[in-house]
Image (tube, rainbow, N blue to C red; front, side, top):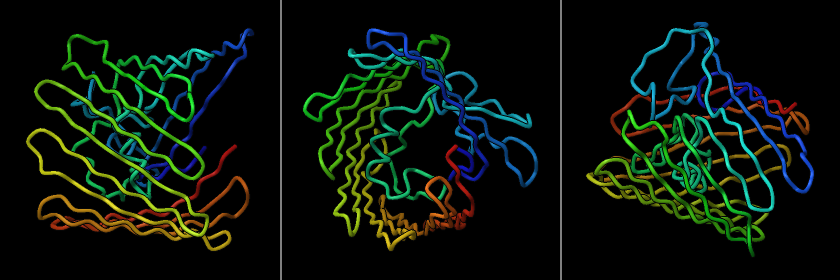
Length: 259
């Protein structure tokens, strides 16, 4: 995949090897580059919000994130590395742009990238799966999070909770695909923060998909809208903008290609 939705160009490399007896080895890494100035953009590239290096600036031409190795099989999957958190995945279920850079759905401060982490995801049983993640580096604030997800037909819904120090976050996200439109809803709470809610809808018109999302947290209101056009089965172009009370608008324009 090239051309991310977080303000910088991204390329993801992944590999899966069949080890036999239902066991598979896997590895993945994403590299990104801010092509406007030729330097890595830690925020746009998904710098870890928990774990080593969270406060370290970088001017390297290339940055990486969501990089892990793991094993999968009938038992589920185990991954080790810098990874997205379960709270991030569940908050994305309720966000019509999937927590992209223009996303103004307030996820209650949900941690996104977790460095030095170990995660486990169970197999799906009657549409239900559970996931657990923890940090392994005892030199940084510990972070644990878990999620319960359910998926069937056009419905996907999840609940996640994460804890670091004295801060606990709880998130619910859901979406339903009616065919003529896909709706999204999410709600979150975090210690010391006001409860947040978000709503959204994506409407397809052939190769075009129009999206609109709204959210609020206390006195802060959010709006996000955009359009995606599929040039082929593997290539699409997109444009989006996010608006938030008291801050400058964020705009995105890009191309996405799946190799």
